[in-house]
Image 1 (cartoon, helix red, strand yellow):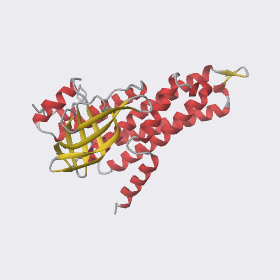
Image 2: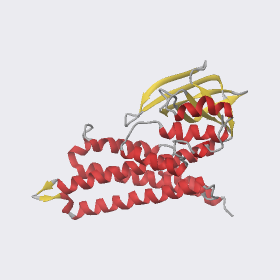
Image 3: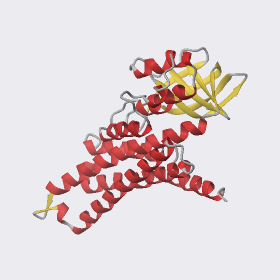
Length: 295
């Protein structure tokens, strides 16, 4: 049954959004293809917050035990009379999901992957994480209300946290490589241009860290400027993520473009997270709209 403490304890050990972001950062550092972001941080948290005790028993508890996976699809769907139709491609970790949270207009629905009218076609993202093409045709869904923005904001912060881990570890690997790789009998980390590139990357990583923690704290505290903080964090996660990923490849030279080299995994992950839930330009436009509405 629904526990009053459950929404703030997802992930175990009393984990709230800030703690979940710490987990996501470590997932990013390991570039681990695990569905923690959509299944725990977004879907299970939403069901615990807005669902009934029956939904918690059926979905949330099995997810926390690792017995089920939930995926989230936020665009491309319509609903009429509680039935959902539409299509979204590249739904993260949807290929093996047991259920989906699907956004349609001003309502979010929980859809069982085993229901009639659900088509799931496995796909693979640029960094080899699992995804799917999700197609729904008049599928019955359980309404959770108008929580689309809640899901997007929470998911966006989670993307930023994961990107932090990716770029942080990519910079560590690149700095270590620059300290041992020699050209002209000198380590390349001693060259001014390389040092400056690494220093810029360090500042970018710290900018992602600061803005992500600020956004996560404001969102978990229901601060009035949380939406602006989230857009700011995602701008840095996208823009800085792009720069750090390219720095890692450039400093590594030829091995940086070798798909069998570990640094390529970080490059591919950073590029996917750069665009997931809105790239840099989209975030600036969102931030501008939010600020323009203020008196």
